[in-house]
Image (tube, rainbow, N blue to C red; front, side):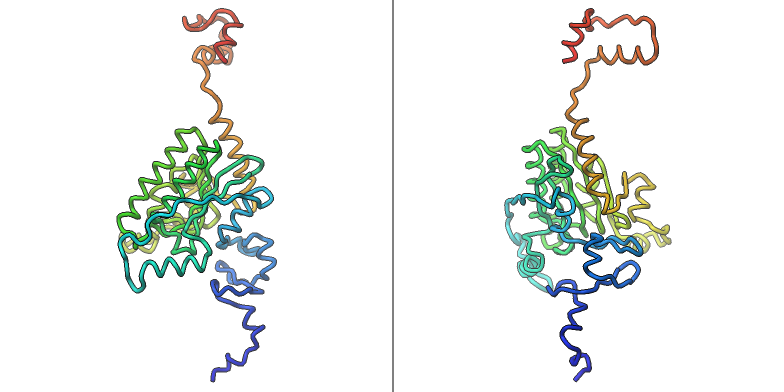
Length: 324
């Protein structure tokens, strides 16, 4: 008999596996290896106080951090056909789905919620990497389309938190078809002149990066997030060259212009709130008449006289009416 079997249960419960469903008193930081008291880690929103490593959090924790007072309304999406290809590898696809649904408590890798972010209504879609690596299948496509429709119906901003390893191989070409499908959903939001904001978390790779994750009006990223299409190891093996330090990390992509801003988790809600207010105001502002634009440019350049275009009314009263 192993001596490990003699350890009291209370000591065993201090450390646990990520998915065994038991509470832990301490957690180990993947970045620096420091042991952090669980209550302190929760208070820090799962950011290591020593190395600033942003740990993975559940969709429920993410939504509670983003929405005002942690209050939001869940939105259900239509359920697609399950296992259309009757796929089987080491396990049947249906068994994998059942196992991941039990582990996460969610029907698939993305969920939608509606609530207020800094007082402004927003529709938020969050990917769950714990559900089959956040892989993109037909169910995820349905959820994102539903989120876009909800944003258009409510005249609200759409925010997507991306975290994925790519397309779901068990659904074959049907999974790859979600790339153009989700792109159409993003276009639907754009045509309604509503903001579409993407927050890239660790990791965001594969077909998700090649579709809706890189189509935002603004791209934010959490510090240290891995972002790219193929992973750095695959790239190194392909080109047979050593990649630069920090390659495909959020800070590297911000420097190269692929990410607009790297935002600490503690500042993310305030940043999103400001962006929504600015973008909603910009998108709702009607286009100014050409005549008024000409007058304002002339005043800015201190031009003494300007021959008004024929379409511009001569009296100030008529000009005000034209501006309306």
